[in-house]
Image (cartoon, rainbow, N blue to C red):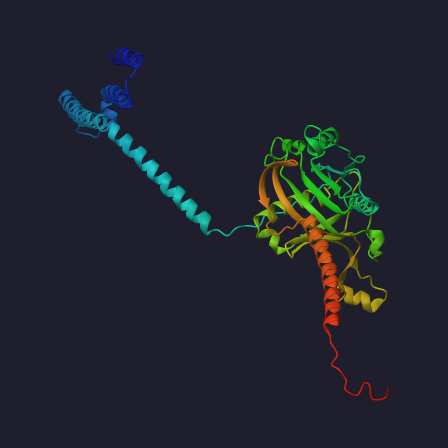
Length: 422
């Protein structure tokens, strides 16, 4: 009977976790009853068979003793069943409450653990990032387009050639001759050339007033937006500088020298980390003058320094050679080991000054992001100098007229002795 009931119970599917636990407990109790009955029957049979051998003399197991033992075992089992049933009812009623309490406790524990983790994270010191050695592969594929407009003088042409020697990752093109009536003007033409050559940045030298004024355009193209999400999809930002105080390498004849195509160390003044427009210019100058690692035309050496200094509201650019002193004898070799010999910087050239005029949102145009309030156009400076020259001429003529009038107004008094000797 017990086995049939177990089969029927196993076929029914429990509706909840509490009922399934209660059914498992009933199964265990029934199995216990069946095992107890089997053990009792075996003990009775063994007692009847070995009645005289296993028991001491004078003691005999009767049927009354066996029935009394059965009744005691049955009473114990019934008491355990009632107790288990009460426990099952209470547990089924409080199962949902215990689950909710467990979930709430788990959530609170997770919150406490997360808060403790955050506190530990705040208390932990910031570890330095381990720098990995470079493998020398060409990954930062920066290309800069360097070109000039039609009508530049020989001085600016030599200056542009010096820039090309400083920037080994450049792409050059012929002089740009665009009429002002064309659609888009110079900006459209430069952007088209940069897209054809696959250049990320552009440096365009423009001359006006028959070579008297030079303007240097620097900016990003639409090609750079593919690799850099901070750049506009149509190109930009771009900057317009007024170029002045140019001195080429041949003109300076400095003693400094470096390897052609070597990578420079770029140094910036502390002002480039304070002013907002200089922060943008720092990134742009780094992309233009910073030679990417592993470029085919570059050399894996660092033997020069390019300095950018902000003074008088202008950017002063210098190029230096890193000259390390070499030991010529044993004494100098010992000093070199102890750090006695110093490293010197020798200027190479070129040197020039950049005066920022405006920063545009687009490439060679667009919304104005920054305007230099201290910038004065060279046309105004020339006009003032001509006015000063004209004023000096007027002052000279005025002095001549006053001298003539003063001579005319001078009247000598009559000398009473003038006719004595006549």
